[in-house]
Length: 173
Length: 94
Image (cartoon, rainbow over all chains, first blue to last red; front, side):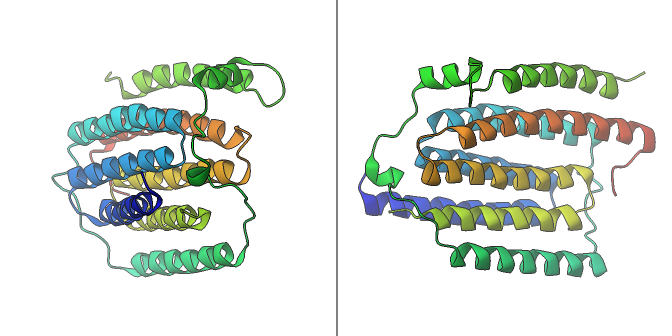
């Protein structure tokens, strides 16, 4: 893919993800909101592909898009909160949120654009920077410096506890 | 050529849109959706900083990986609590 085409695809992906995340936050129907979130997560997988993190893109699609979104839809069905959904409050809270958002965006992008990031090689130019799957496995199971055996095991314990906690909390009587 | 700042601007916008939704929405599931947006923006940032500034290391990538898994488990527990609250109280508006 030539450079200009990939740049255009990137811009398209960025614009779409921003618009969809605004819609996810603003839309009144909860199902639509979740669908927009789903598309935002897919766009994020596209960003990971642009960064040549293929493994992360696969994780993103399988965990978020396959798991979390389905869970959300289940929760909406079980609580049927879609029916009595939204009287959005036009009160002082909305104004406060707008002020916080705008000032946060302004401050952050000011800091971002004033700071000069120093990087020499661009992954789009340098070409194939894909991380080998074997290497990822070694880093996940290794016990040396910058290897992640302990977090990996703690994470498996966390998932186990989450399963138990989810069942216990959501169990009916 | 895609500069690093473009990614960062996108993730900044996504993060603050999430904050807006987190404050304004009343339904608890919608608040969780905004939380997902914020976490997603943070994870994009991890990956971008790793790829552009430290391309020979993998810390950001693994932080993103662990972040995704922790986000999923957090969502599971939060939704279980929401469903339980719905059973007890009858609505999930805050």
